Image 1 (cartoon, one colour):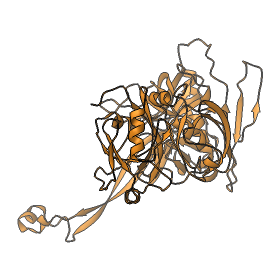
Image 2: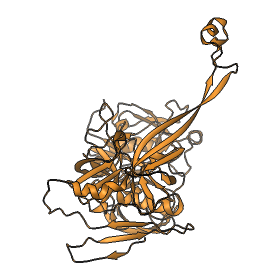
Image 3: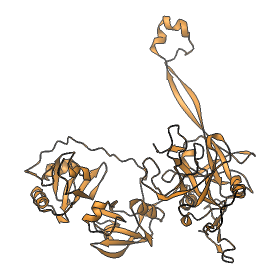
Image 4: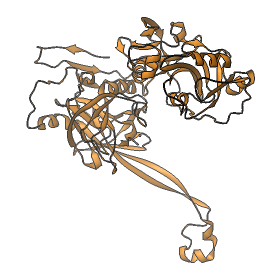
Length: 510
């Protein structure tokens, strides 16, 4: 259990209210010749039903599909002989048990446990990526019956989803629900293998939906939050609704001081897990799309005020690369993405999640807000590359620049300089970027608090262009209102581009 401190659809219908809408997925494995059948019910849970005295029937329906997963990792270590053992004084106590060589290699096996969920009768099992990632051997135990050696079909660290396959037939596969139908307050049961205690069931409710922005968790976050007790060993196990249908894969908790449950657990919603599972089964990996040529950011309340936006919903376009698919579609810096293929976009996470579920090369309709007016553009998505590559977030605080004529900026605590060619080359600022270089910054200033950093280039103040240091000082002094809207060019390791900042103009510098 990770800690916080980390198409196939055919529909048939029956009488309304009497039969659930059911989809049977026949997933063709390209070149493999097998078709796992996955059962999905898309109707919401019956919220008008009275709470009964027991969930035994629900557990009997779902629990047989939840399995125990045992992994083994072989760790090779090299032991080095201490020079002290060459001393006869020490050798009289330890002898020659360490041999006469300078070092020797020893092997140690690290074992761990987790849970999984059978999703097809022929042995496909959903689990969490971190349960099986790096394992040399994976064993699956179905109930109290036979133990199987599992094959890892595919892993997807960005969503923490993995799919396994065991050589078995006629297994009791769980029914998948539609997690888009969930509501806060719905009753859920968590079933898994906490602390090695097989088939443990706990009950709670859905505490929140669409949780994201949690540090140390998956790259793509759309978590179901629940207070059902989830503990180490529950990872990869089932979160089911009051009808025993799978709504999520348990993945993480906010632990107490002993590493156990304190009522805050998270599960990957089954719709996202199913999307990833289908691609892992068909091709062994997930190929995601991206909107190439933009840098996007979340909208703070200050930015919303500075940009005259009605609210904080959407993803703000900070920069658009020349000749990119985004620019060719007519997207401009300062636009706000509020819709994607008919889905509402509330923040950067929801936009990235929506794009990631599309195929590279496909077209997408983006609903934008531009200067207070709504428009829709069509853009071609490209393949997301270098996913999960580490980013160098370090910045030098002692860049040896030789600024030209410097001016004291009216933005308190900020000193700017003209962007000389030698400085441009040293900081690798593109020739098309014009502005004023931030070469000194009081770290207690309002600008620093807003996110301005030494080495940034101010390119706009309150939507007016900045060509040099003199422009920056003049526009800063002329700025009115509670917020000063800055557009700055910023480098973060290998990533560079413009972004928006909103500086509080009401507080006196500290």
